[in-house]
Length: 604
View 1 (cartoon, helix red, strand yellow):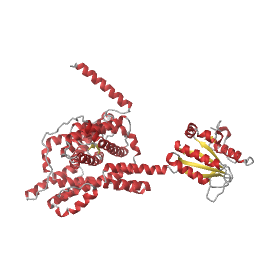
View 2 (cartoon, helix red, strand yellow):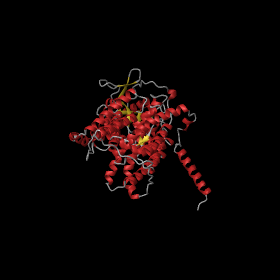
View 3 (cartoon, one colour):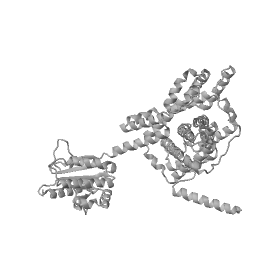
């Protein structure tokens, strides 16, 4: 048996290794500790008020998301409590509240549909959350969160809009008081909701409408009160009164007092292989939601968000939820906004809200039987509608044609298919449209004015020397643009009088093997018709690619002229002199201003 001091040594070594790993990855434990150096009673009161509002909202949302995922209602509350407590010790945002969300709930439901009814939900959730947590923590240490900056904000706006629409659509039948069996996609839910309208349960609809009225009145005239809590309490009282009059409304199920099961994941490699793809999709959505929400609030608060640190916080929260019977934890838009608007000052508000949720579910669980389902559904619908930001949608829809296409594709996919597929499709569409823009380099033909300065040629203007064309290349010349670039230069070559083309590559970027091969083919094409290609104004990175690929030897070093940042015209002047040598015109005067004192020593 190991001696106690041996265990202590192991603990010290483990802590040292963890500290070294965090430092190597530029991560930290409790990065927001600076906010607590001057923590005061006034700060605590503001955090406590915000935490109370968030906890009251977390209850109905947690229940709704658990029901949406096909899990017992306590899973949503457990997940909200655990994630809110654990995440702030690792995350960089002081306002983001981590917990169950709509998107992850839908993914959980689809995972269970694939596994079938025989799957053990408790064990499956534990293993799934373990994988999600490990994926996120590994990604944070590898600093992959920065890659999510390439996900267009338009995709996020469309995804949130689709998720909010799904929330509303899936709760209407609960307000109307009838079950909606066999409905999955958005269109199917809407169609069956309309078909079952004759089965409307009028007491349920009455409670739903009264709940909406109570919410509106409380939000307008009693802003200091916790709107969600007041609404649920008053709606429960109204439902109890109706029940005494013989008009029964369906309520939620209760949770035994003090009930909180702990389930450690069992390492089952076959189950791990089955759940790996779902876990990766959930991890992707968790990072996307947490980053987009965290950055939005951080920008308004004047804070700086570390995406990888945020990823570590979400990963730690999911790892904890895998042990304490929670749900997948991500950045909650509604709870985070409520936390920010309620005046929270430090991450303590999230920790306190988690503790309030934990204490309430342990002590007040049996009282859930008095909460009417229609009232809860109305609250979830109101929250869902608040997610739809008309101003952001307007910006995404009006900014550019590409943004409009990406928004519509993501929104349509989110309504017609699974939300995770909508995210992937939206990201793919935004990348494709970006590459399409980036793969269109601009080629502008230049000539000289009487003062010897380069200027863009008008279509009606003729070249100063019809045998020499100066073509300015602007943009990226990577593999996606190489073919278009080659074809554009070929069109310039259609002029039978043209003998030499000078390519000014001063503002050309990202040459690669494909663009080098395209240039080589272009040189060969011009030589076959007794023409010449000269490159001028090239930067060091362009020269490095041309040299390493061997293209400079095929082009001829005498036909390559480096650019000079101090004297940008000298490369074009030297290229023009070389062009005149090639066409045998040695008498023409080159009128171009340059400072000979700043001319580079070599040509290449």
